[in-house]
Each structure stands twice: as structure tokens, then as C-alpha cells.
Image (cartoon, rainbow, N blue to C red):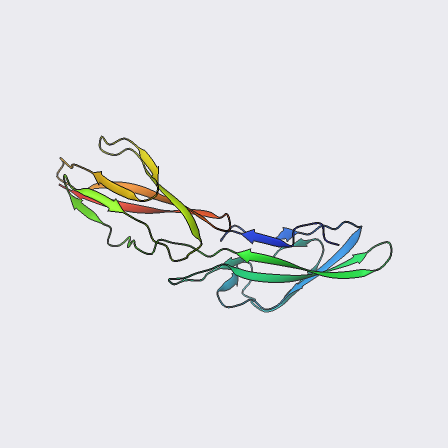
Length: 193
């Protein structure tokens, strides 16, 4: 019987495999079906079925789903355990949930928001997935404005630009997903003179 977890969550671009363990002295073999659409193996162009032996399963997968409603993708591994003492075999399944690449859906880095000097900025992030459970923001000190942070949306931040060029304020939007993964994305605000 496997003593390692049978359900595993992995954050996008942070997974390079896992190790299985058992309650008895066993040899292991494993297999998985062909990869579904939107899952790539970063170590190989092979998206077909894969199998191997040993307790460590090195299968560097990433969920590349894009669009307005991305969700985790489940990959199922079949693990065969063979008891070294009795020769008995047992087959069990392990499910690995690959978190998607969650991004802001209401921010265009090529056309960042702007305000005129003395204006206020408010921003409520929306995401390309419903698995975001919480978010916060922070920005570093800039042009006499101290660093600041807070939970939830950015509400009525007022900036005065006394210079002759655009003042750039860099916000970091930090968010947590229901599978425990975290990510962040930069939002740039232009404050015009």
C-alpha cells in the first residue's frame, strides 16, 4: 500500500516530479496515459504515454491553458507495487493536479492605466480563472511616496507629479489560488505631469 499522498497539487512551472513510498519493502513501476491538451512535458517533446521504474517519477509537466476560464488539469499515474518479500503486487492511482497559469485579465501591459497629476487611481483585479481566492497589492517607494500595501482592490490612490515626465508607480498584485499556489503580476500606473 502506498504511504505517500495519493492526491498532489503542483503549482505551474514548479514541478519536476515526485517520489512514492510504501508501507512495505517494495519495488515500483509506474505509467500514465498520453498528456491531455494544454499540458506539456518541459523535458521532452513527447506527449504520449510514459512509464518507468523506481520510486521517483520525473515527469516535468506544465499546464499551459490560456483563455478566460483556466482551471487545474488532473494527471493520473498508475503505480504498481511489488513486495520484495512476498512477491505480491498491488496497483494504486495517484492524481496530480497541475495549477494553470493564472494572470490578470483586466490589465494590458502594452497600454497601462494613466492619470493626470492630482488624479486618483482605483483598480480591482480580475483573473482568467475562478480559482483565485484572495489577492493583495503593494508598491515600493517612488518620488516621495512611501511604500504601501493592502488587501483587496486599490482604492483612490492620489498622486501628484511635479516633474516634466511621466511618473511610474509599480504595483505588485499578489494572489492565492484554491490549490495553495501563489503568484504575482506587476501593474504599472503612469502619472502624467
